[in-house]
Amino acid sequence: MNRRQALTTVAASATTVVATGHAAAARPEPVQMSLALEDYAQPWKTPDPNVANRMNVARVPDDYFMPGRFAGKTVLVTGCARGMGKAAAVRLAREGANVVGVDILEQLGAKTIAEIAAAGHRATFVAGDISKDSVCAEMVRVCVTQCGGLDAALNNAGVTDALGPDEAIDYLRQRDRVMAPLHLAGDAYWQRVMDVNATGTFYSMRHEIRQMLAQNRGGAIVNVASVAGLVGFGGTSAYVASKHAVNGLTRSAAIDYAPFGIRINSVNMHTTETPMFDRGREILAQRSATGYKDTGIGLAKIFNLLQYSDERKRGSTAAEQAAVMLFLLSPESSYITGATYQTDGGFVTI
Ligand SMILES: NC(=O)c1ccc[n+]([C@@H]2O[C@H](COP(=O)([O-])OP(=O)(O)OC[C@H]3O[C@@H](n4cnc5c(N)ncnc54)[C@H](O)[C@@H]3O)[C@@H](O)[C@H]2O)c1
Image 1 (cartoon, rainbow, N blue to C red):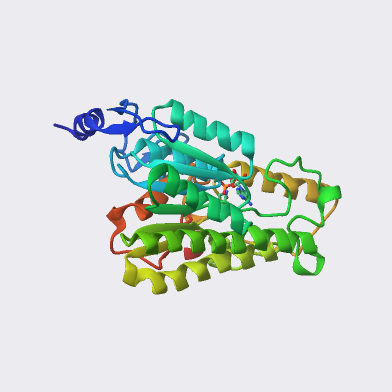
Image 2 (tube, helix red, strand yellow):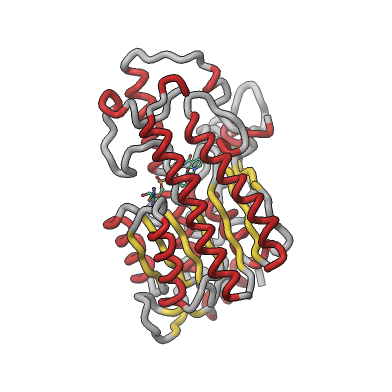
């Protein structure tokens, strides 16, 4: 039996519980995954005249999942409406988790969770802003009342600026609320980015850990930081400070809760193709059109190793990030805690 046949057999026998928060009958998981993981890399389509045999690393398919890995587990995902949070929530549900998703974008978040539920999985949406302690209390309460507890949490919601996640970009009107070197940075930029990324992660972890301690069966937490939480970047002071805070929270909590079987890690990505990245590019383009110039040091290094090696200079996909998030959330990563994973294509290596 080859790999494809083996995994298809597993998928066909897996079961999930139908969504909406009510008890429902188990039914077979539809077999709809891609199993094309055979290749590590493929040759460049147009050979590089300077370097023979150049290869692109093959990306994990967007619909890849491991059947049954989270069966019976309840997993909380903040920032579930789109981007990496959505990719992780969808894959968690396909792997058998009861998903509780949280987002400040009420309609889009509800739509994402409804799609997961419509595919036959159990998923619940909580609308709210994770920079509020009451919202973080509520999201954990929903895990307990709807699903009987909390096994793992992906603290993914984050912002790069003080704009609403779906606010149209108009740099000239918004310059006090978007990224800027420190001497030009506005109070609103600093406050909102710190409130969501640092304080929101703190509130999320506090409620998640209290629940996990009360359950006394361990658990796993993954915080989404950034390469900006590992190294400095020019022109984005609050974001860099806030993501360093996320990694500080990760490390200190890993120490406090290892004795209780709760593992806490972070993932630190570079360019990932999501709405956040597109919005950041748009802000920089509009800023550049105003004649804005900086020293250039902040963007001295643009590509990571894999981007540089890739024919299209592609960034990471949300699915590539979700793959590592889910590994760290699952009991499979049993000997990993306090780690700040570089999921950055080698950005901070060079
Ligand atoms: N995309 C990248 O290149 C990149 C790089 C490094 C780190 N990150 C981090 O990855 C995480 C996910 O980013 P993404 O690229 O998927 O972004 P995204 O903007 O596409 O998705 C983020 C989600 O979080 C939600 N959200 C934002 N603020 C919230 C709040 N206060 N309360 C509840 N929900 C909120 C948004 O509505 C959105 O659905 C973020 O923490 C981000 O800082 C992204």
